[in-house]
Amino acid sequence: MTPVVVLALLVAPAAALAGSPDVASTHAAIAADHALDRARLQMVAGTQAKVESYRGRLAAECPNAGAGSPETEAAEPMSAEVADALWSIAYGAAAGPIARFAKVIGPLRWTNSRFSQAIHAFASSLSGLSKVRLPDICADVRAWTASGFETVPPDALELNRQVEPLELPEIPWSAVARDERGGDAGLVRYIEHAETKLAEAEFVLGQKDWYQVLETVGLAP
Image (cartoon, rainbow, N blue to C red; front, side, top):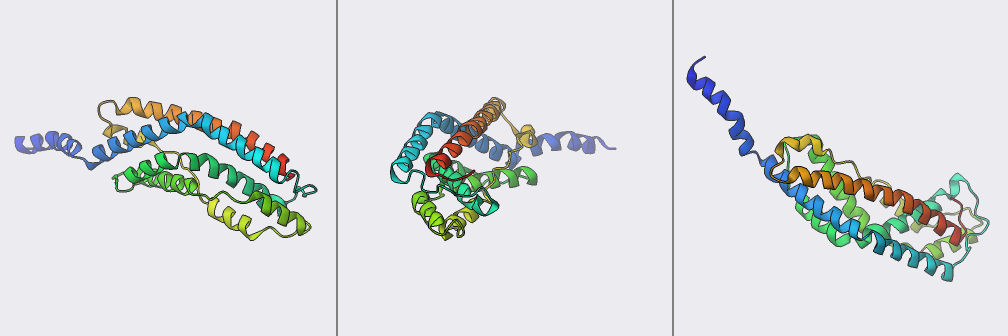
């Protein structure tokens, strides 16, 4: 092997890495996700206050309106609509930071297709969740009760169809670790910690809020 070929093999990987578009995309995505998670963590208490206010409103407007609602598969869309309402409040409160994050992620591309698909799906689902309309739970529960618990209101069914596919995949940051520069690794550690805290809050507070709202309007889980 000639010296020229050997030199080319040694230099080419470093040069390719330095000029890789993945480096710039990865840095931009990390910065955007870090800003999003910081904003969302700061909003947890305020968002919970909005949920409590919403439950108080339902307690005043339609307490126990679904009394006698069966705990059957046919009733599941009604309890699902309550979850949709809580997601509307939680993600709607962060609509601004979510929109800024999605705007950054939209044009970014990676050679790692698994990572690219995951982060774009994450941004798309977040955007969708932030735009979920707040349903009229009182009206729908009254209609469900008036039908003898046989006909789920069309609005509830439509909202469930809208929300059901909005899943949030885990972003595999390790797949682009080689493209991190400067303080990116530290920001990724923050992101992973923050998203664990957000998931815990959503599970613990979300479950409690869901059961409490169901009880308030008289629906079975």
